[in-house]
Amino acid sequence: MSSQNIKRILLKLSGEALLGDHAFGVDPKVLNYLAEEIQSVISKGIEIGIVIGGGNIFRGEGLAQSGIDRVTGDQMGMLATIINALAIQDALERQGMYARVMSALKVNEVCEDYIRRRATRHLEKGRITIFAAGTGNPYFTTDSAASLRAVEIEADLLIKATRVNGVYSDDPLTNPDAKHYEKIGYSEFISMGLKVMDTTSIVMCRDNNLPVRVYDMGIKGALQDIVEGKSVGTLIG
Image (tube, rainbow, N blue to C red; front, side, top):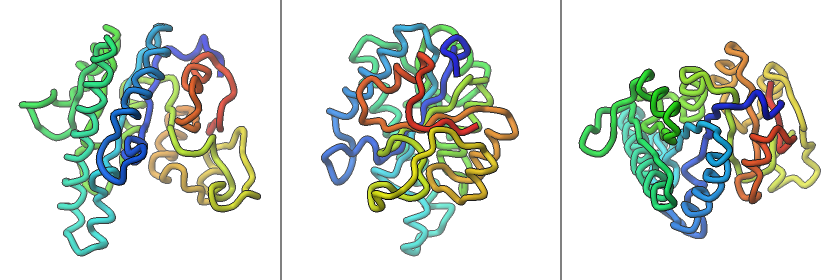
């Protein structure tokens, strides 16, 4: 994908990405690293939206497996994403960037309600817009929320940050023979049952012709390389 075609991106981060060396919560070193990576992209005039998960604090599906009502568990997970979003906002602002948190749940004392037109306006003004609380509905993952928000804000590219550099036929952390895909189609991704992103999110991207780039968040400078049009990780589309 040419860098000339990339003006606005949606960056999807997992909650676990914020753990760093910690077993629970947020590692300040990871926040600072993320802020530096994002700043390198903002400096090029790219508009950035972010969707963050909450798995470092609560994961709704996991709570449901332990006996908690699934809807209640998902609501707890949504609140966890708001905590993470506020942490990212603080890290970005400490490095001189402007950021806004918009929540799909009403938490007016700490962040704005998500309104599509207002979100677009924030982006146009160069503010990094962090979308919290998923879609605001249970049973939907933050991957699905990322695809939805990316489509709504008319992003040119959805970028999924993971622990490995792209999409593989199997988990490369446990299977060294796993095949890496430089590019893969939406339908092929779905039919192979690959787990990097859930099926609902990929179907939404396919139906709206939204390309997805999956990369290793730990590679310094990779996010900047992506917006410059370089081939990093895996392109789904």
